[in-house]
Length: 101
Image (cartoon, rainbow, N blue to C red; front, side, top):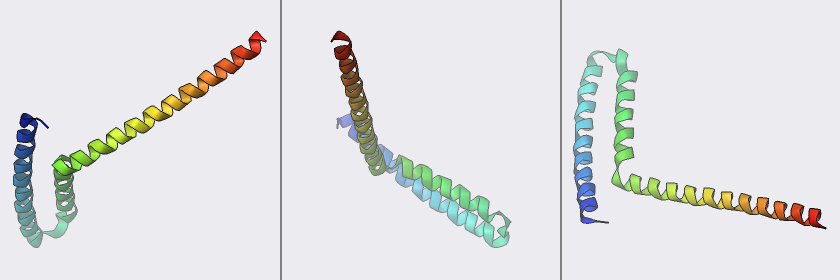
């Protein structure tokens, strides 16, 4: 990884830690709100779940895992396409061989 990449990753990690702290503060405020009026508990829960999802998607370790999964998927698709092309080649050659006999 380049120096610029390492710096960007470190900065992202710092910002994510700050984002998680902010999410925790919001959760505390929403909990206080729910103690007074419980009608919006689903909305508050959905808001926190969405914040968690976004933070999780941006997490450096999770991004590395997803990148590896994406590369694996791409390699599998490429292998599948290659097999398909090989099968087509064999069929074409067989067809040409029969016509030429």
